[in-house]
Amino acid sequence: MLSILMLFVAMILTPVTIVIFVVFIESSIRQDLVSQEAPQQVGQWSTSVSVALILVSALLLRLKYPIATENELQIEINETKEHLSQLEALLEKKQHERTAHDGETTTRNTTNIWYGMRRILKPD
Image 1 (spheres, rainbow, N blue to C red):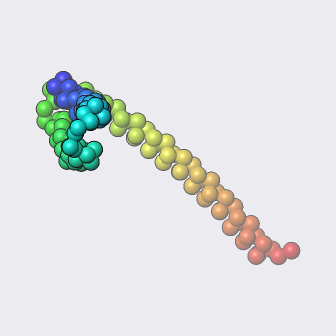
Image 2 (image 1 turned 60 degrees about the vertical axis):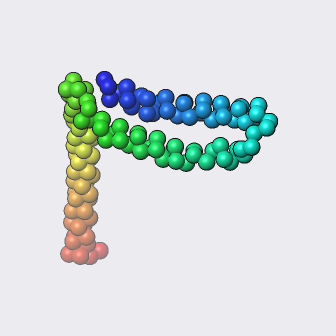
């Protein structure tokens, strides 16, 4: 549960906080007519903050399984097994379709060879 909460904070609340912060700073700059700072100076940390937030998100995704509870891990394993069975069924279906297609091709090629040999042996 803790990991889900941390992911929620990293993926949802952090961008919302950044947007609110930017709106607040922009409104402060517009209201403060005597400000000595240019808008470029206020936004000088945006790149560093963006990189830091990406690194925090990556760290949280790395820690997703080590900090998960046993129940969360079991749920993830069950979902993965279900997904695996769906993929295996899809693979089996594709192999069956290919085998059926190869069988038709083989029959057609055999028939063509047979008629070709008949023409060679019995010219018109």
